[in-house]
Image (cartoon, one colour):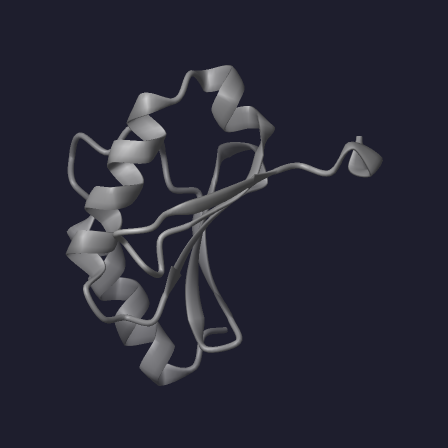
Amino acid sequence: MLPQAIGGAAVRALGQIPAEFPVRVERIREAGGSLVLVLPGELELRLGSAAELRLKLEAAAAVLGSLTRAEREELAYLDVSLPARPVGAPKSQLAS
């Protein structure tokens, strides 16, 4: 269960996902006060705080849309908490 403050932010985030978003959002969760959208393959889209949600989602859409499906499947997370500087990391080889 999400805390009330995060729950409201989660609803706002889900409501701002553009129709043309390149991947499906499977669920949303909270991690240390930050919003995390979970995408196919357990890819985490880390949004950070609820500030600038539309901008963060646009940055995520641009990055995710530029990747092939195989490239997206190799990502463990994409952090857009600073939308001007998205950061991604591959899945650990040890987890395979």
